[in-house]
Amino acid sequence: MEKDIPLKIEKLSNREEEEFRIASPKEIEFMLRSVAENASRVALYYGDANYFILTTLLGVDDTGMWLEQSPDSKNNRRIIESDDLICVSSHLHVKIQFTADQASAAEYQGYPAFYLPLPDSIYRVQRRDSFRLTPPPSNPLRCVIPTGEPQEKRPQEVTIMDISTGGIKITCTENDLDLEEGKTYENCQIRLPDVGTISVTITVRSLISLTTKSGQILKRAGCQFHKLDGATSILLQRYVNNVQRAKINT
Image (cartoon, rainbow, N blue to C red; front, side, top):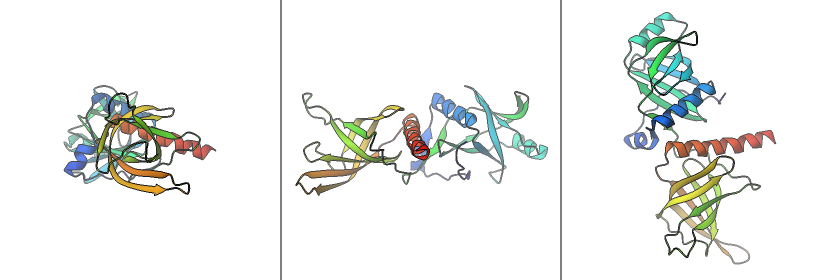
């Protein structure tokens, strides 16, 4: 079971709604199936979000989902009569939130349940102050950045110093890559061990130069991911979880 995350409703700005919104039916179904499989708690808000119950997601298919009913029949009746439901849970240690117009009474494998249609969108709420992970020295991360130069000049590979779902910090020598502060680089490739390769767009937000004792000039850049999609966020979070789990077990 995932660690507890406060299941309070998040008020999102217009920018955050655009950034956090996942609208792919396949991604939504995959995410909700994971919530069910991990027995993550779900807060089901009703009555203009003034009341809620803690429940679990029993099952999901490509049309909808089944949530366990409350032992209190009065709460169940109020939920069924409500037309402004909000569900808050967590997926891979990140809060998720979505709305539903109405729930209907049902059964799922013999359990009294609420049936809700699959939502049109889910908000995966992870702000820019997200946890940044330093890759283990035994298995470093690299980012391959297309240079935009003639084809005979290969894309440049740089070392990733830390990574999160918000961005990366990279380092390279002065001659490796002509980085520019404020410049955006598309189709950058990062291979995440045991997870897969992701393609991202990064924007250089900060850039400094350091001189080593030997006189070599190094560049270090703080880069922000640009409009990371839900599937890529999930893969990144899975990599972070794998590394953290390996540290705990060593």
